[in-house]
Length: 186
Image 1 (spheres, rainbow, N blue to C red):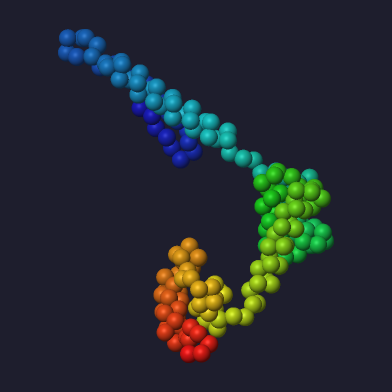
Image 2: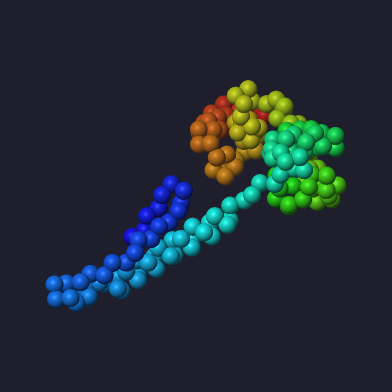
């Protein structure tokens, strides 16, 4: 029988033969073989998993390197390279990890420079368009009834996904057609 204690030591008990009253061997050898085969598989799996555990690298002085120290050094290097925005730093760290290269190599990489420029452009465009003043309710220009009245057609669900905004636009268009004059002389 298999016994595992706290230190993961495995002790296998000796096989005892079963003998009936007449002296015949009644041991189920097939069952014991299957049982021991299962134990062997489990031990093999456990051994393979123990080999897969990672050993953390140590510095020359014998101290273990801390991920926080490395991150601080990398962030300091990025700051000196002109990458100071929190989102840009995260982009750089994730890209370096994904590509498997060091931060100093990443900063000079043309592909990363393109990614960084695209990120900066997107962020600048978002900042520039977020300050546009329009409808006081905070809705975008395409959700305002005045836009659709001037256009002359009601919006589709793809154009304005908010159902309440589409209802508001439709009601405004109907009331505008009732109140507006069609001809100059009317």
